Amino acid sequence: MGGYILAIDQGTTSSRAIIFDGQQQIAGAGQKEFKQHFPKSGWVEHDPEEIWQTVLSTVEEAIAKAGITAADLSAIGITNQRETVVVWDRQTGYPIHNAIVWQDRRTASYCERLKKQGLEKIFTRKTGLLLDPYFSGTKLNWLLTNVDRAQARAAKGELCFGTIDTFLIWRLTGGKSFVTDATNASRTLLYNISENVWDDELLKILKVPRAMLPEVKDCAADFGVTDPAIFGAAIPILGVAGDQQAATIGQACFKPGMLKSTYGTGCFALLNTGKDMVRSKNRLLTTIAYKLDGETTYALEGSIFVAGAAVQWLRDGLKVIKAAPDTGTLAASADPTQEVYLVPAFTGLGAPHWDPDARGAIFGMTRNTGPAEFARAALEAVCYQTRDLLEAMHKDWRNDGKETVLRVDGGMVASDWTMQRLSDLLDAPVDRPVILETTALGVAWLAGSRAGVWPKQEEFAKSWARDYRFEPAMDDKTRKAKLKGWRNAVKHTLS
Image 1 (tube, helix red, strand yellow):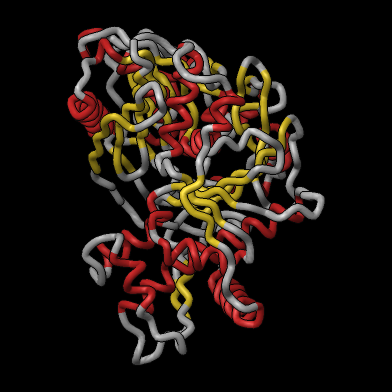
Image 2 (spheres, rainbow, N blue to C red):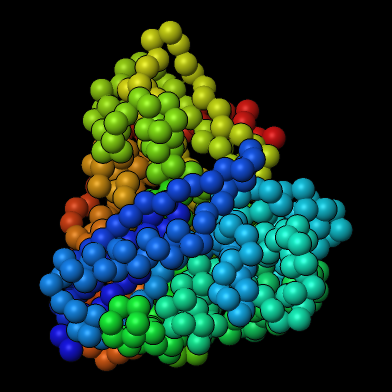
């Protein structure tokens, strides 16, 4: 078969398909952006049908570029934007509403009501999560409450709920497979991560009928086979993981204490804690890193809602740059005497603050502040937020005095300026891998190893290769002054 693996990487702003060969090198790829819908302030939606079409077209493009046919593919791995919710008709397969995106904040008041009822401790104990609009459960409750007859139809088993992975698998298999994996399930507020089951008490609180939930499998498992009419061959789907867990796998962070951070639309840092479910005292999330061969590995996670999205805002909102790669060059030319801080709370603040009502703000502007200073502030905001996450992680997880090394991936890490500033502000080394498509690589490995055409975990980990290590070069006095300014800016932004 040649060991070709197709990775479908369905992200927040675009869908990508990447074909890896038997040597784990990229043989072909396709990418297509899709429309973001903002029906009200703080609301974010996607059209699931448009997502489906972008997945089909990018897969066809990747196959063509690789110079192979669908019959040459040994398996498919799927990774996806997590927490985004789709509900569809079990008979027709057609969604009853737009997908509600992880960034969406429409359920903030509902989360507050649940907190006032003293329910957050129950959710945190069982799911490792906080009561925040970020997660799937309250979004699903909103759909069941606000779409005509949805609650009654769901109770009768007429509707299906899924995160994007489940929706895509349903479509790819012609409605034969209604499944998800443990990592995606762990982000729903409905899944007990210690017992690895949908939790009846949580379902009752959020008024979610069990009949609409998919079967939960390990990350490497038999998820179904594609309908031959779609790509021209029946291809087994053998690997699934939410995007941040997939990146953790792709970065070969298999040992407790290993740490990765992904810089896409948002920024997500995951620390492998092994078999230990570490309960955070610093507002981090306890989550499933991956589940393989029936064994669950846990992680501490810090979630930042806006990273690359701040660069998109510079490009599409302010129109101060024409393309994302311009940001680093512009930031390097910024006036060093101006300390401008952007707190990008466009959709609230994530970890460790978890303030859904905070909104974006800029501090330190003068008449001389221009595009270069805005660009630097946007990139530095990502670095400052990462620093906040790592400080919280170090309080929760004692690393025995070992030096923290951060493995990074995602679109933003191509910027040398940003990665150097990240290392400077963290006061820690930052390792950028040779293969930046670690999210796709992670699910490709899940599928490829399951298919028996890619190496097992230990050999795969040995193949991880570093492109460059960024070492801190900023003096301590400057770092402390900049961090003090950041903390002051955040304090004035919190609701």
